[in-house]
Amino acid sequence: MKHLPTIAGVLLGLLFLMFGLNFFFPFLPAQPQPPAGTPPALFMGALYPTGYLAFVKLFEISGGLLCLFPKTRALGLLLLGPVIVNILAFHVFLTKGAGLTQPPVLAITVLSLFLVWTHRAGFLALFRTPASA
Image 1 (cartoon, rainbow, N blue to C red):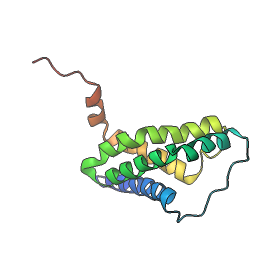
Image 2: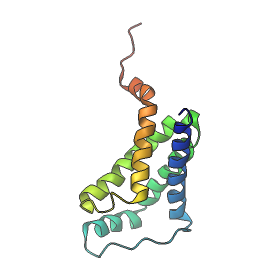
Image 3: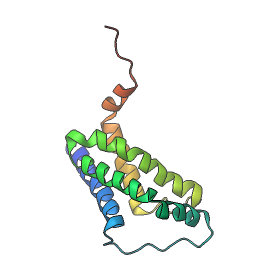
Image 4: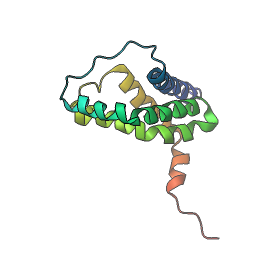
């Protein structure tokens, strides 16, 4: 049981590292493009040419690397948190729920929630006010 956070951190880190690096060095099969004119196509059409997606992918790579190691895992989760929320929001709002049950989306969601739960004491400390000196 004590090794589960390490296993989850390595798996989450490798997922984000793999998908982040795939953007810059394509080694996975290309995903089918959404039909032209649909909200997902318009959204992705804005991300690619502006360079914003490259910026997000750098966060994925950085957060993925940090999640691999227990001492930096909480910082990696802080970097990946907004990315994960946006992945879920993309599937909820733009694809109307399609893709939420794809294995990578499920794995990222479950692993990140588990890791946030195991590191909850550290994250809760961010919301506590320091004691008066």
